[in-house]
Length: 147
Image (cartoon, rainbow, N blue to C red; front, top):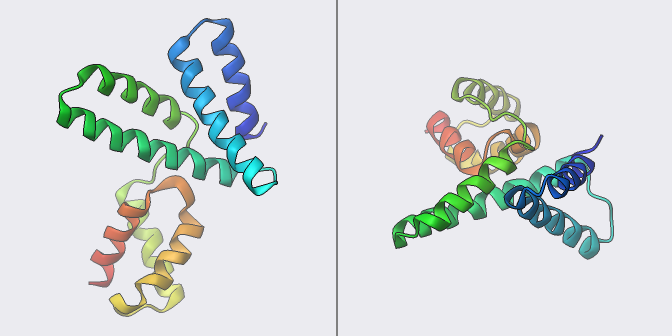
């Protein structure tokens, strides 16, 4: 079963169970996926869907930070619940030691010696690691290893 199908099935179950918070989050995810499919006129692969989920997750985390700053605890709780739902559909994030080992291998493969070659490393790392680590974490680790 593809990730997209899993989201659709879980949406149906949430509707049957009258779980409005889960239903609304899954509807938002389905709408985001459908929007890209319509815009690009193609079916999305699981990797593409993971990218959509990562983008949605990042938006929710940014919103949480803004709501905390504004003292809107009610909205913080709502968005944190959405974050937890989205995380269930993403692969397990890489541990720091695992990420570091993977990046060391990529740096050796690419032959990077300095920060000037960070772009090469980042491109390959994004392809290999995918959605198991966000770009910020990868970037910080690459800087540490090349610096």
